[in-house]
Length: 137
Image 1: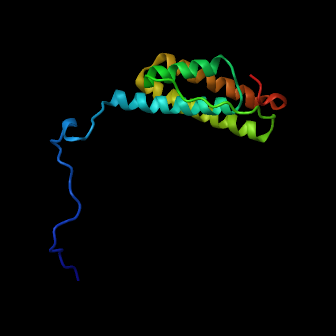
Image 2: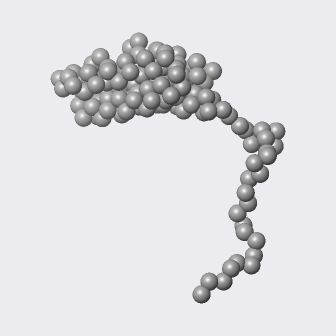
């Protein structure tokens, strides 16, 4: 019923001895967490911009992304959204992104980013709990 394959496998194993000089960049766990944290904060900044929030939080998020990436984040100016289901969805998304950033910042022991993420979570929770002013901060 079973016949062993006679041909060589087409799957090649990566040699464990290869280094960065062989064309495979290596990064430490800390560097990988910094990249992940910068990505979560950049996504949070994009949602903040989409909400039309031009507040201190957006400036502080941008500063953290710049610190982690070494370059300024791309910012887009969106037209102001009217309060409604779209803004509530964006606030939920922003809250989720801030929670992810908080998790990674805590794992990285990045106190400044963790505090900022927690504050942004609080701000978006407050916006979600205030039905008559879902877009206000």
